[in-house]
Image (cartoon, rainbow, N blue to C red; front, side, top):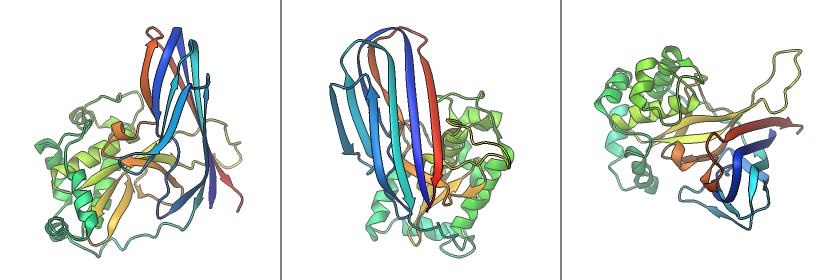
Length: 294
């Protein structure tokens, strides 16, 4: 299966910007399940300085600086991704138990155990707490298979929370999300990660795209797709597995991974600073995820 992704971001400033510096995470990374076969980023006005690199987590990052006056900044990322193999459904009722996962995390081998323990810690947007641990605790009995518990916890978030893009902002605390039971995919991923870390399980934030199909007989609307977010958990015996609480499922072949990190702040699609521009800038984002013929 192959996909073409086009992600366009536009900033309109009420006053002139004299200079900007930006960092993007817009180009899909290679994983066990996908390969990015083509990727490019265009910036208008053209940048005076730009560079691509692999960041701390192995994601593709792109830095640029526009050093001429402008009131509109437009960044367009285009990529093509090939799904190498369908994600296999895990045998959720087998594998290490919750107690075994915690015990095995203390081992120095395999080496991935050490790297995974970093995702036990607090991060800029996720702080462990007793409140978060209490919300999830009864889903994670010591004697039950760990991945089965994560799957049930994913369903709990889906069943108990309402998707509402007006309910939260990027900075809304997790305790507020938990109290009002509303939010978006970013909130649900952060909530799950916060609960898991509070219970002693490593979890990371995954950003990317999800193929969406129009209703039968309806045309596909250009620019109507959006970025998506979910979370992944680690078991020393089975590795990493991805879960999507917004859609009550494990990540499947329609999930296209862009980047992963501790939380949203590590993989923000586009962030930076500007000199000038004034207040009340206007941001518009259009995303297209198109399935290509084999």
